[in-house]
Image (cartoon, rainbow, N blue to C red; front, side, top):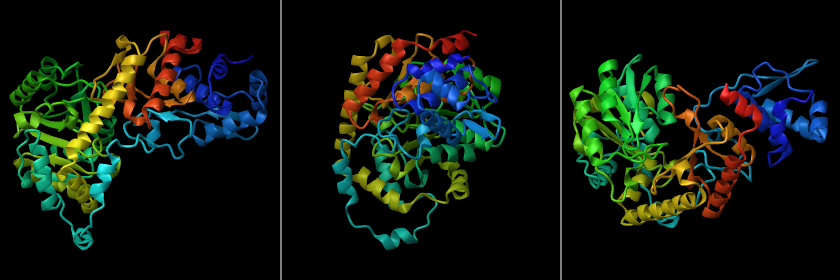
Length: 467
């Protein structure tokens, strides 16, 4: 008898072998198939689908390559346990599919051409003092680089001396350093109830327990933060006040003041992940400007110029610098002086304001496409955000929709990847507008996502969701 999960294959566009793989992944996510189940013999599946057996063999080989299945001589092909991902699948993709539009995370390898690329390139073309940079080994970063970083942060109201700053290998490295310096194994760490997956990975590896704090459209809710502080005794809060990833929630000035007051009352340090702060128009005042003795501020060049630079800046309260120096030496010893040289040249350039303006303009144009093509009630967005949240309907769960979208050639991310504690099945996905190489490609991807959303989930997905 033909299994019900195979019905998805015939309704899926694209290469048939990938449609088979996608249908199996959806069935595993929804429970229509389970680890240990035996897949149909290849000849039977080929006959049911009116396909050449070579196509089915290619699908089974692809599932074994991805670890979804294993072949046992004389017995057949059996499904494996699927490991829960700790990041978008594109972070692990080795060979990009030519027709695949990957909107699963910000600035993947085949992302948009930076609208100010020529301005950035001009700053990289100057001669380098290679001898000095090669010979440099300063854990917190070269003084000249920290001077420029301090000036950059000063534009946003953060007063920082060079001795308060560390040059890091990007924002993710800075989050890791903060957990290493401020907490110990077994400690509880407060975070938004939807937290950046990189923070979740770092906390899990270091043996720190993340505790989610309820959010609204302005981010962390002060009343719930107060309750969780009293209940857990945690002494560190990690949060993103501006353009929170993935919800785009942005704290007002009053909300920032309230959060700072709650943390002061409970003697809680704040790690402010402010990698999107420069996108505000005008930029909002960072928490580090409100409570400089209580806030570790993180910024990065990844969202301004691209992830390849791997340079970030941390402004650390003076009494904590020593602990962060130990964490730095225990992790990477230092960030690359070469990368820091290019990054600080960019920040010191008279063109930096134009670069930021062009990034804002391009992002706003892409968000306007979202507003034009998708129903407003299904979208949680911000004009300056690189992403938006799409609330699903018609029986879709986030995991099933993500798998089905991948089969038709679009990558998105289920919000379950960001959940600090999963209490229910997610019905929302994150879509990154700046991941498409151009606006026309983004339009194509959004139209595909809309058609899939309107078509509704297959019956097997609806049944498992109802259960």
